[in-house]
Length: 196
Image (tube, rainbow, N blue to C red; front, top):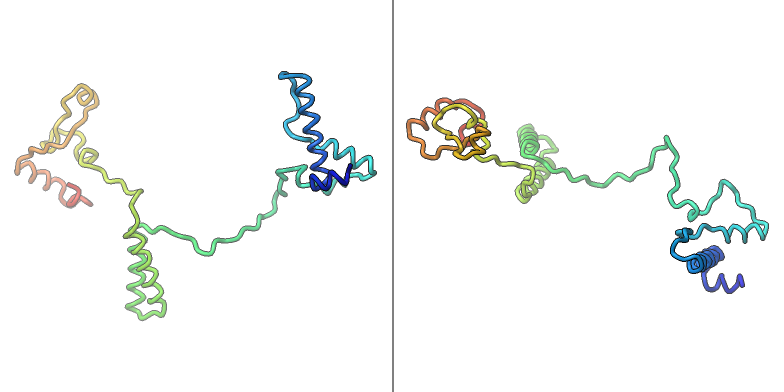
């Protein structure tokens, strides 16, 4: 029987697992729907076979199928392989810093100027082809300058919700004088020139 089992299943453990599954199916058929049995073979028949042959299990050596998720030793560093090249997305500030570093190296006649120039050109190419997903462009409605006050550059939203919340919107019918007043008021503020 063992020779046929090894020939058909490959090893005795798989044969005993198949026998265990067959026994479990017979029990389910006998006892019906309410029978609660095993979900998968537990290896009992294989353990009995080993005991019959006088093979006792070494507690330190275990079959990997007995414990599918072994617990790793605590306090021991895992060996990892570092990636050969890490891709780093540069933002506009980092790209400008790289360009400044490249220009300084060129002016000083540094031997690393050529490598910095190549690195800058590659980063600039990636930056040009990349779609900006993290840049949020706020419209005029979200501008903090518009909130509050009875200035002529804003007008209140004329509906119930707008009145309750004090919402305002941009006044597109501003006169030239109103525009000049707004421009004088916002003069010298960072980014004030190109936002509106």
